[in-house]
Amino acid sequence: MNIYWEDWNQRFHRYYNFTYTLIEYCTFTYLVAINIRNKRAKVAIIIGSALFIGFLYLFNFIYIPQRIDSIPIAVETVILLIIGIYFFYEQFTNNSSTYLYSQFGFWLTIGIWIYLCGSLFIYLYGEHLTTPEKEQFWFLTYIFEIVKNIMFCVAIVVNARQTIIKPPKSDVRYLDIGEFKVK
Picture 1: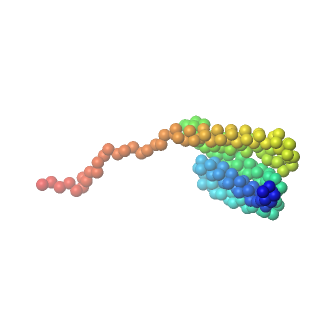
Picture 2: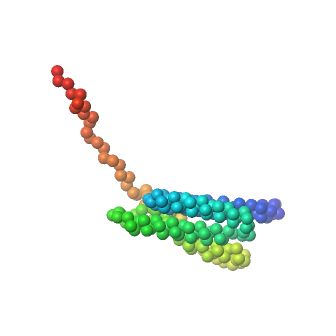
Picture 3: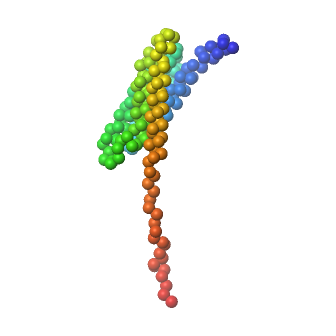
């Protein structure tokens, strides 16, 4: 059974890395991009995402990483940092009277940044870490992931507490004044 597992691990590891990084990137990009208002920025995000997905495919199926796809993780982090910086730029130039931390996009972006920036260097060196070094430092990625999940929970609570503004109900009945007939 152990021989089968090692054979499976060697054959399908690149598919796992590709799929995990792809789903993580698409999810994080979507969560930040839905909070961006500028249409040109959204188009640029879509074009950049298509280029990144092409790069990710080429990296995982042309150059086959041995342990972890550290270069695509670094590129993903840089792209998401740029998208997050643009999100904050757009929020700071907006003349809204609401506080920035009262929007769920703020908490999503902060959570993504903490997770990606906190675990970036561990993932970058993941290809070169020995097993004892990996056991010594890998727990840090779990801490950053827990903090990210807490920030996502705060974003859910903030989004649930936002009041949904409905248009006022009209009390004026339909008056057919033009059709008024006198007997």
